Length: 272
Length: 227
Image (cartoon, rainbow over all chains, first blue to last red; front, side, top):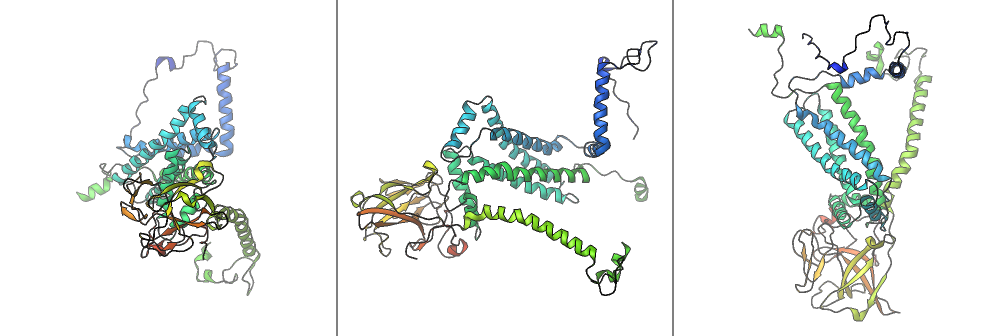
């Protein structure tokens, strides 16, 4: 591939030519300007870290990859899902600062406080609530892209399997998070959801007992859902997203199905 | 490393595997012993916090929840022809979320064909729909119980009349306290379509035919009074 020339920089960003009589460093007396000193300090810190961790190689490996011809906006759905997850994680952490998993009424009262009184509480709660739906929608769009582009095929089967586990975990997040406002809707939806779990033969009755922490919806059901929603599943999702990204980087991105592989010159000759 | 693929690499004797410093008849050398010790102590350390945590999370499945008899009113509160609505406390300590509703009437031998005993002189039906657990409402004009969620309908005895429910409404044991003369309500039980008693099951779990084996008894529900 011939190297293309870099596009010209705008005039304000172009380095100013040195004035006559000046040596290498800006103001002529061999000292660095404060801006240059700050840049030098930043470079020193980054170099210090990189010398001890070799992080720059990993970052280059992760971010500066070769991608096939023909990739398009559909390939951003996975990143979009990840950013939806990050949105859920960040807003969730701050909602947890105000939320109380107290089934006697404290849970509903704390959600009411977040919505009605806390500064920006309505916004952060809405970001978490609507972001949850957005994340589910994006996951299915991403899954559809991978399915219809055939990107799940060899050697990317394990990436697909991890993605399916991530989908299930995300649905479990939706199920456990729905209870937390503890209003009538979330209470009865959870009753129905737990009983749907209970209809699985043989293990269903014990699964619903596990979810409720007992034979009836009880005092610890809410805190159990809260712990699963806030600690257990997010940790699993973060770890599996890491594995998913590792495999994507390791295996590379698949080309769209309409892109034909470029034939090797010798093969082309052999066909003729 | 090349030794590993030789025939002798399957042997349990370190000498056959040509390990350095091995001698005739030795199977566990220092290195093998140390790696086994490190792996097993790591495993024990991981188990030491995993197993108690797992048991802690799964414990409620196995701990039996006690029940108590609750007074729901004098015998004059109940008739044979219509239901009285009674609020029960089924879970302590969580406020209104621990309440449930029972519809109670006096047993009527004309229509209640199941065998009578000391625990069903008053018929107490749970308001829990046996489709997926929404609360049913007794509509006296129709003599039916109707569920708002997915359209389940039960007749006057609590048997399924229409819709998705898989079995009749759950019931509660009732008794008349001999000293006070008041009606008391006890633990829940489930019934199949012939009103045979079973230990309480969750909604959505049929008890007819093979259903009672597909959805076995749980460990945490209260024992039946007479079993």
